[in-house]
Length: 247
Ligand code: PXP
Image (cartoon, rainbow, N blue to C red; front, side, top):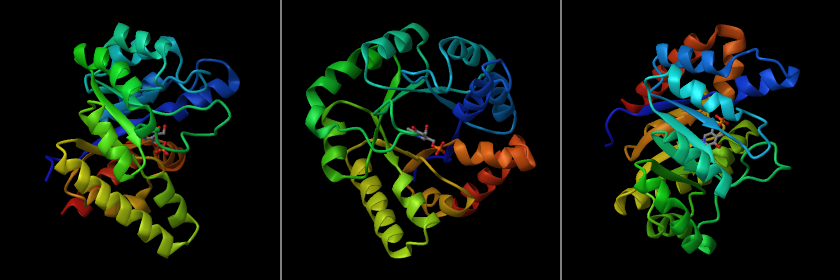
């Protein structure tokens, strides 16, 4: 069993709301501070090519504001690697990125791009940044992530959560079984396992219960809940649900 399951709070959607008006409010840096005070174990933020979430200046402001680790989500591009090397966050999660997508829809294609990714992540690892690859729970992708030299993978829980929301319980359970199997395979290879995307109070339990999982990254749902109950209360309730599932 991994040590205490960590909760990384993704603050992207505070920035999305700010950007909708083009001003400075609400401030994603304040959200990072509040999340830390509410018990988050890390902050996650995605600097997208189109800057629809956080912007360049947010990265240093977040790093100055928090004492917990920053997990910097980024596409495998030269521009983003330079920014990551400039800031040296605790962790970098490499994600696929398409301009036209609403969110990170699928996992990274590692199996077909293993050599390029190995070369891409090596300088990040050498700089002391803990690199994870955001992938589907597919045995070929997990094995390729290991061969590419990533110490961590994050498995995409989006399909599991979508199927749950649609009431497709059989398909949801099949997807959950893939995640369970993926976590086991990855742990057998010595990879640290994270999971995230779309998780809610309703879907987090079976994921948090997996002994191989070390960290969950959760954003959109928490920010939505925060509108009604406040961010500290939403984080506290998620923490409670995770701890209850972990037993
Ligand atoms: N993990 C990764 C790699 C992501 O790209 C995202 C979404 O930005 C999340 C976790 C969090 O997903 P959600 O905002 O749906 O909780």
